Image (cartoon, rainbow over all chains, first blue to last red; front, side, top):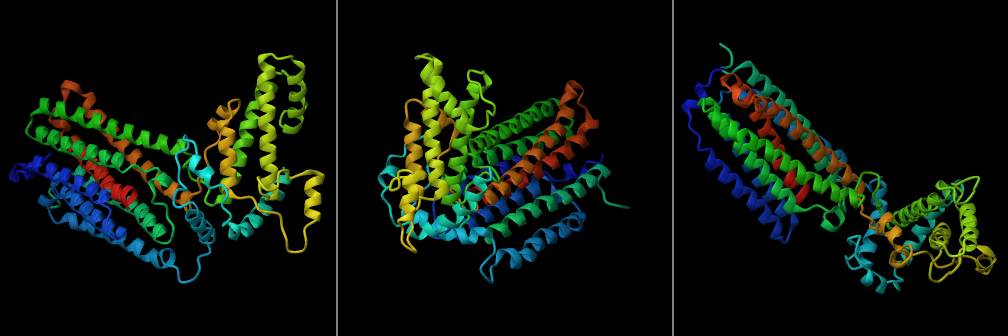
Length: 162
Length: 333
């Protein structure tokens, strides 16, 4: 096995490791510091991820010192990696019309649920729901009554068929 | 002539090229599906995703990658004792990664965050509570029918079993079996009441009984276009809380029924989460198997294994790379 490539280039692996730790800490910090727009967090954190990936690929995987064959290998994979999502975004990622997915209809119901419970709809399962019981008298879900009617009528024949 | 690297290394890099396409396919699909799903769950109360766990796992993999590089450098310099020290560190950290991952998976499974298990609307959540409570009742009744404490032709027919249990409870004269039978019949009646209200879609509080002549008369008395007050999600939550706090059967209900928690796009999220982290975990296990071979050589580790260690290291760095992208995409975004 020829290993002359290693002896020619000395890499300070510890320095690369420290850089990777710093980047990891940065991305956790970016998440904890919630920016005004969540998209900013996503962009920053993905940029950090790309930086970390480059560190691992260039130094740990030694690609910085390898020959041009690395481009022959990575170019098709990169093209596919970026091209496939780009090709799918106009079909699945962008809605030109009201989407046919059931969740699109349920979104209104879920939004009104979150509104009426003041964003406290999520709970751990083991604590008592004292604050939820206090809100039991809510009557502003009348708009959902129609939805409940239809969906439980669909459930009713299934139940009776048991 | 030809590329100045050994065939094994070239072969591994070609394989890594296919692996890159493998993971970018899933990651690309995740990105596209998420962009196309307005209302995707991001609240940790819905997703039960812990950024700190993911961050620790990222750090664990980075350290293990560093140790692999140190081990390989040692082998290239023929310092095999140093390599024999650092390879087990890498293996150990791989176990730590899988351990943290299994803690995360346990958290998800205990909250029933699994594909096709998650309710996505309040109505689905109500129906889920109904189904889970029925299962609790069936389990409680099975204790008696399995032990043949009561004789029923069809143990699945809850109404008949309940009637028999009622007779059994009153006739046994206060034994332990009779006591628990009373409570199980009471739980069955509570579930029946809830079930009837759900099927009829009438309010638990404003319409006390959803079956029988009184109810039918109330429906007859409605004028055209009028309907009885509908069942509300908050009422079912409150009823479940009452059932859970009951001293007699509350324990069974708490064990068998999760609090309702509808999450829009929850099933798509769970499916993607388990697919991506699951495939990544499988790759981690494969990496561990690759490292096992040189580790099993023990003191016989020599320069013949340098290529194997280098290639296993390359594979391990790739596994680290995938996680470096999975962490922000799944945990932070």
